[in-house]
Length: 316
Image 1 (cartoon, one colour):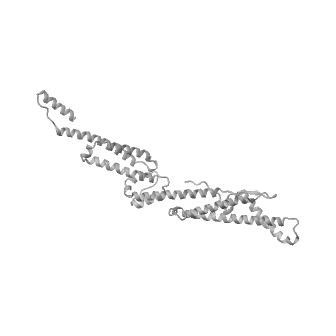
Image 2 (cartoon, helix red, strand yellow):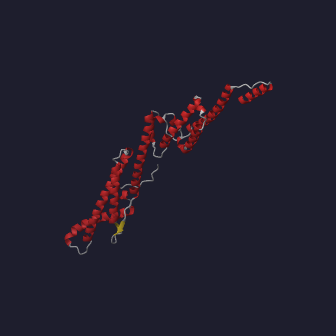
Image 3 (cartoon, one colour):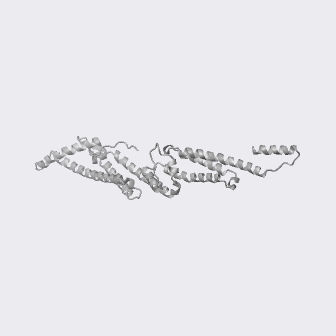
């Protein structure tokens, strides 16, 4: 419009043989309007991004896509004419500030969006920021995080996320041990015509080695500074593995004793001088055989050693 007006004035001046008049203020205003148009087009894009981002549920946010959009906005901002900065327009520096703040916030949001972040970590975020917000997936939105100046607590949040990663590593180890010993079974072998009543000694000795390894791993875990959320569970499993190891060691010892006694008392050539002991052995023998047969049917280590029922699949 300004260009058309100037051209009209110049045409009139030429028509009356007048020297076309210069309009420096008009030229300056026209140039500024072009610059402002570029600035506000980009500002509108940012506002649209910011509005959509803030209204997004935390459980549904795609931070990678948001990062790409933000990078595109920043690239367009950096490509704006340098004259915009020379004009010292507030809108230019406001947009720059908003974009820079987002660029600082996004890495923190990525850290907080990691799978190891649990409710207890969000409670710590609330504690350090002095702000509270609802964590329910249907109401927890990005604006809850954008409005509490997360960038001011970058070091604290980084520390929380680092602890969360370490805690997850410990939890992964714990789950591996739990899964191994929840599903671990005993092997039995036949003896004479009694059926499957004897623990396979070599197999159990290997189990004992695994138990020692597991106990050592759990003991090391209990000494780390990041174990607190799982301390009770790890300590409980440490006691379980210790009990299983002691029971299996005793079991093998008793089994060897039974084998020796069985060979003596069930020997037809045994003398009458052991008849009383033989009667006692018969009573013990019945209980032993019953226990061994039941164990060979169950086979699960936890059930056989600690009488624990099998656990259902863990639901996270």
